[in-house]
Amino acid sequence: MSDRPMIEIKNIYKQFGSVHALNGVSLNIYPGKVMVIIGPSGSGKSTLLRCMNHMEVEDKGEVWVDGDHLNGNQAHLNRIRSEMGMVFQLFNLYPHLTVLENITLAQRIVKKISKQEALKNAMEQLNRVGIAEKANVYPQKLSGGQQQRVAIARALAMKPKIMLFDEPTSALDPEMIKEVLDVMLLLAKEGITMVVVTHEMGFARAAADEVIFMDEGVIVEHGTPEQVFDHPVHPRTKQFLSQILAH
Image 1 (cartoon, rainbow, N blue to C red):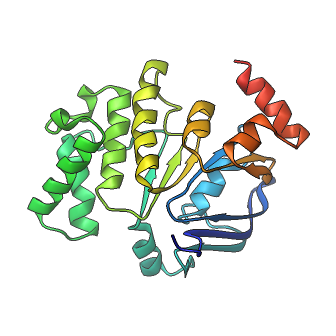
Image 2: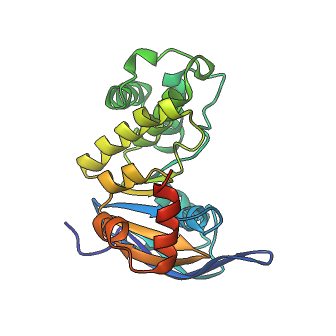
Image 3: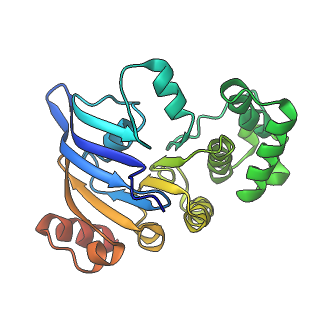
């Protein structure tokens, strides 16, 4: 395993109007590791995640991905983004395209691969997420959990070095959450580099190599799941976990 971080965040700041979303955050994410980011709403979790592929651009500081500095060069950014899968709260599937067409589109446009190879990749990933039988179905015929698994398959079909998940289960009904988390647990076991913003503490405990707890735009606590969940040091972490884990 490489000693060099897959993602390096160096002292980044981000402000939206009068809101200081990130206040000097530094973080290293290593190849093959699963980093889970927890914290209350408005703590800067999603902003930090979105800075990792420059969906949000930091005001100060630096972001490096696999040794490349993210800067304002669009061609450079597009190349780096093509190696980062992103899965959002909402599935962002094209309703007029079948599942298979949704998964092959970016492969053909961005990666410039043949239709046959794109279809083969798509079916491999649909098998991987457990819904190969839905290949020719339109998104509106799928449950929320199935749509999110299609979104994960679409990201995986691009053969990314890194997968970013921004609260991927928060828009799902409770009974659908497990099917998506099970797929993510499988990916974690396969050794894909993953950064996950989530409120699912059971997933964080089961899948994470490292957990960070954020509040008010800073990293308050950072450690293994055991350290953060069972032996939190900071009073703010203890307060947050006591409220979350009590439910």
